[in-house]
Image 1 (cartoon, rainbow, N blue to C red):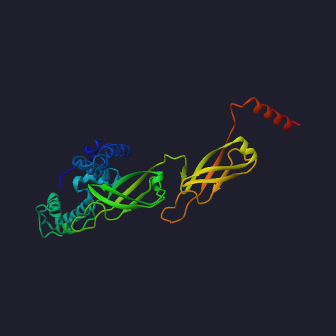
Image 2 (image 1 turned 90 degrees about the vertical axis):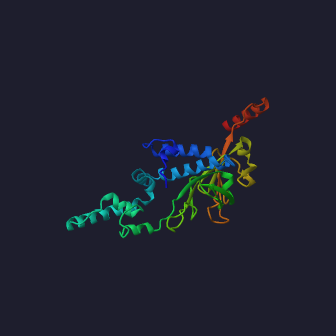
Image 3 (image 1 turned 45 degrees about the horizontal axis):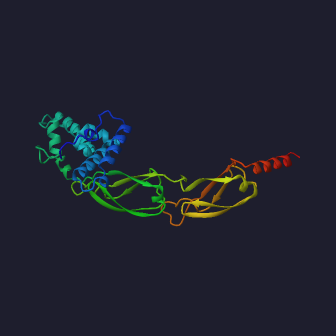
Length: 299
């Protein structure tokens, strides 16, 4: 496996912060995303390289291993265990006075180079290793996750079909088992982790499973009462208005909120806040009537 400079792939320095890594990845991922570069093999390859680099550098532990071991970073634990065993072996053989194996020979024998084929460390090459986990982001609108839907994702040039359950939240991460990189020596595939970025372009505010909506109410209806039509996430409903409704009064519509993740037919609530609008551009007649009301209240 040839060495790949992940820092160069993302166009960042080796001293880049986590924030700089994330910013660089998102910028390049948008630029080379397969949905925006259909039938562009070069863009597909670039997108794969970008995801691979982000997989390593966005994880502090993986980044530390990569900085130390380069292309063999996934076997860092084996290297460290082997180093400890080598030190122990050298101490023993030094005491016995018959050691001819040096540090580099030891690692070559462990990972496939020249060396003592009978070494116990050489057998470690037959150990199974889980494949690399992949991470990707999926950007959706709030309306998209109000109901379950099927999507096809392209990750590292591989199409993956999945069902997105209703009620997914912003920044939520789900794992798709076995859809990561291939394992080594017959080991299991890695997993795919999908982070959801939910854009809200609606007038509703979402907090968990509840939705919040501000509704304007004219002064006359707020004083006299009546009935209005209010938009919910899945259609309009009629609401009775009590006489003398105050500004910033709230009303809860049970079950009219957002679906609960992976719980069929369960929904949060819709909380409505009334904003009473003071009338403007009054006619002379309206002004006279308000003055009469004022005089009545002062008596």
